[in-house]
Length: 265
Image (cartoon, rainbow, N blue to C red; front, side, top):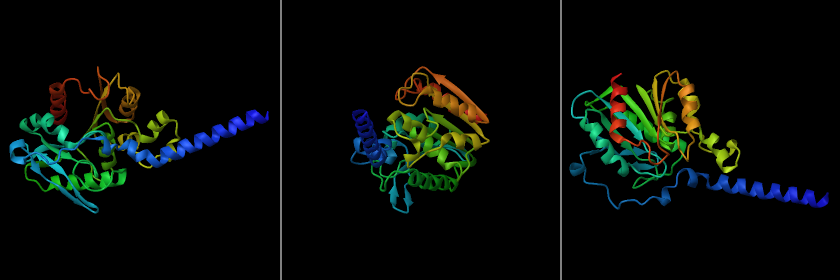
């Protein structure tokens, strides 16, 4: 009996040590910015077809680029990328959407790429509030047709923005229900998560249209998360796609058609 008790106690000690370690490094896991290769300089705005609309926050400067829609009072998208990405990766894919009359605001996370600060739910929300307010000052953007689009952890960024600034609609790509729900994959309790990104609650409270795209073979954020978000939404539509996580959406042109049709509706 004594040996069994010692074994159990050692197990508890090891687990508590593991949980403490995960608590300490959780933001390095959620925001692995140090693992992303960063170009030394941004593209030339004129050649790349964007306007630099950088943001000044309480901790410093955050990089943000706007792809103009080419007209007055056009719809616009505020886009939040995944945790292993930069706005640099999305400039070319979204260029066609701007050419089709929808402005695209690519907003960097604090501490990512060439931006200052440190990523957290609080700092990211402050950044995206400032981004939304910046769009309202533009004559080429219709303030009644600003759509939030988030991919993976970026879905958490745009959902966290909803209590502060209301979008016309919401698009979630491969997004989790909450960071605390994802903590179980690491065998740690959800209450240890510092940046909860409670997307399920925000989607349930939002009364506007929600488009959810999720890969049925998603190996990082299980497909069940997309299903749960769709069920929670008052005006939710789930589009299931034949893809995993990092290869979704499988057809970018089809995705752009979906976005434009969604905005038009």
